[in-house]
Amino acid sequence: MSTNATGKISFVKGQGGLSMVRVETGISSAEIYLHGAHVTYFQKNGEAPLLWMSAESKFDANSPIRGGVPVILPWFGAKEGASAHGFARVKEWALKEVGVSADGSMTVQLKLPQCPEMAASTPFTVNYFVTVGEKLELKLVLANVSSDKTLEIEECLHSYFTVGDIASVKVRGLKGVKYLDKVSGMTDRTETNEEIVVASEVDRVYKDTTGTVEIHDEKLRRVIQVEKEGSASTVVWNPWIAKSKAMADFGDEEYHGMVCVETGNVGKNKLVIGPGKTHTMVARLGASTQ
Ligand code: BG6
Image (cartoon, rainbow, N blue to C red; front, side, top):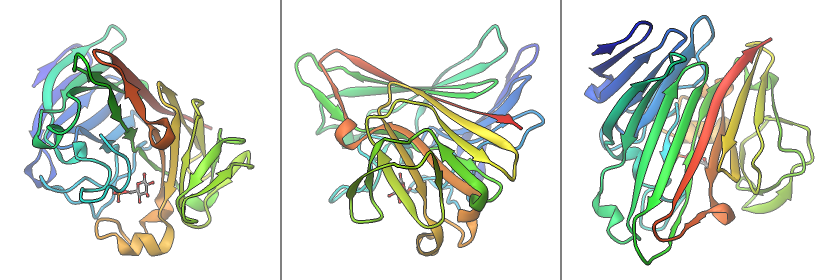
């Protein structure tokens, strides 16, 4: 355990006996599992938790955690002969460093270990910086460490947010943006709504969009902001009734209390990183109460 004037970092066993880092700053607290470099919890003092977690989530070395912020890498979605959403979310990441900033925020740096699945790819490294403060800031740094090959890669910070009731939630900031509608057989559409309402299954990959998205939650009387840098895709997902029932690690009724607004570079926005180059993507997640 290490402490400073206002903060504390503890290294503990979390659910399922998995290694976890608990961060308590003077302003907020967070929990980060080394399994998947998975942030499962962030809460500002005196406010409701920001991130949603399923009560049915597995916590074992071979399964992804359901909720929080899964790190999706090096591919997004299904891939023939391989597990969906890549392998980074089921690897035990290495804890590299913890640091404290002058403003009292604390940063935990994690690194994806080299693993057999990476052997076929252009060599790359992944470092992840989780900063816990006024907001939860997630910075993913991908480096192509080859001297002559290009790296093509998808990434996504698949953030699940807690909402009071999905029926009284409006997602703003995507009007006019083209998206791939995964629910209607991968149809290309354009968002026409200022405010997106979720009243059935929603699974959309918004393309070429770099702006902040807001989740207006009438019941919890707050607005969640999803700000980003270095990201051209935003994914909005709520599984609704049938898909919730079909997922073993997701409660049948839990879709009422969550929505995913994900920050990434996927599909046509996949990254093409030149030899020796790096790419940095940041998702800054916070909320203001009304
Ligand atoms: C979203 C995808 O990002 O993740 C959905 O767009 C998918 O299609 C969802 O169902 C959850 O994926 P998983 O692999 O965690 O069940």
